[in-house]
Image 1 (cartoon, rainbow, N blue to C red):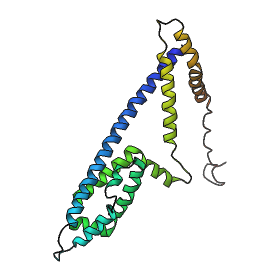
Image 2 (image 1 turned 180 degrees about the horizontal axis):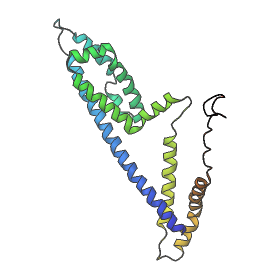
Image 3 (image 1 turned 90 degrees about the horizontal axis):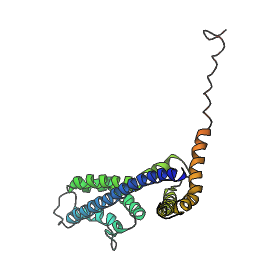
Image 4 (image 1 turned 90 degrees about the vertical axis):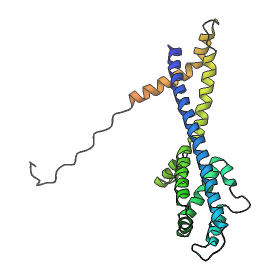
Length: 221
């Protein structure tokens, strides 16, 4: 019975593992999309900045100003090679610059609106894939909130790996292996059972109090 319960737990863990794999695939795709959009935007901005000043507006000097804000020397585009959290912080700063009126004038004046729209979409996808957008919203909703998901994920993965190793040693052809595995898994099976019992013991919510009608209201004795 204990081993059967564990196998059900393992099936749930495997389903979660497949979900995690799908999440990782989306993160990789979102990261590639973001990198490509920034490279395309950099090329467009560099092209506008390289024009001669012919008296038309906006001036190429404005395109050079924007390029200096987004891709300052000596780093240039290097921010897209950083770790996700550092990359996100660098991109957020640059996206705020692009929202400014001066930057928007450069984008519209040199025909970069299509580049900008695709960059905004890729930025949102990156934030969603890595959970940065959700974390930002949570922080705005209350003070002192922190994101403990990385620590929880690490602990969960370590526990899952340990349980899978124990279960893999349960072989019907090896005398005593199943008993040993059941013994080692007993604490985790007990933990799952205790959590289930705790949920069943959870007290029902009290019914909301119904305010008494004011004195003199219709139907009041």
